[in-house]
Image (cartoon, rainbow, N blue to C red; front, top):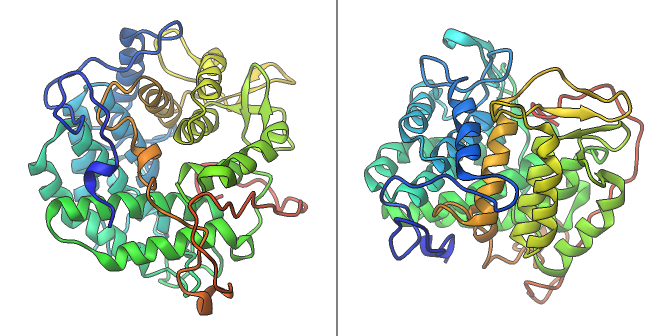
Length: 407
């Protein structure tokens, strides 16, 4: 059984024995790259985009729950507690009766896309657990527990017998007929955090833990379970970031894709066939590297991505290095949030700094949970047996797919 204290036990300034910050703290700082004041400026740039109702949206103003939660986590890591709590309150009030959030909500709370993505509904579990690790506020977790529980139950309503989770429930209520590797990897991480939160609340959820085991095995060992989106870098590193791959399997997977996706000195491509590096993908790969112990590689990426930093601390979404121009011509809240979370992972300024590293630390996705459901034969369990790296055949692209809203 995963225990809450297994997720993060690093000591932090102003923290308790579990490393949970109990008082206002200094923002993260990465020596030689960014000071605490500079990272605080990045946090304030996110807060400046927060809407009156607490939502943190895209540059065009629309909101989705996943990116919103990532921004809330960054606000908390920077010590901007009021802004973070307003963000979590938006989650509570905007949640649908079935536990989901609409894929897109415009300014003023007008829903513009009524479909609901499974990884969006699951991700608040990560944010709420992160907020507890940072602040130690049990009252907050109790208030948000019904929100997390409903979101997880919505997500698991889309889980298939083999373990993968359909990527969305359409506006007409029907489920999508395929699953996404990146989305399911994120859901795996969300389920691990939800299990820990449930233990803390005193309402253990063994069914969630079983669901996480099934999903982790599908991600680690069954590439055929997922639609092929292999030209996206997220499909490369997310099985590691989400905790389904650890040990030698994770090392092999990241090594196999490095030449294809990493542009030395600039960062990580969003897609393999475009001369375009993006800040969020670079920082997420950093978090994946840090999670498996490659702190040197992670720190190098953090230094490289600073070319996207603007004067006020906000970050441009990406850089088209053939044309030498920012692309798209926007500074996105989620990119700045990813930078803050990456900085915290590198310097362990808060009790939430290890949330990606520790969430699946004691989990083993290599062994089948239900061989009859997934088609695997009996296997000996080994946390380092390595079931990867996953490989997808390259296929022709079926048009432009937005990188953050449904791979």
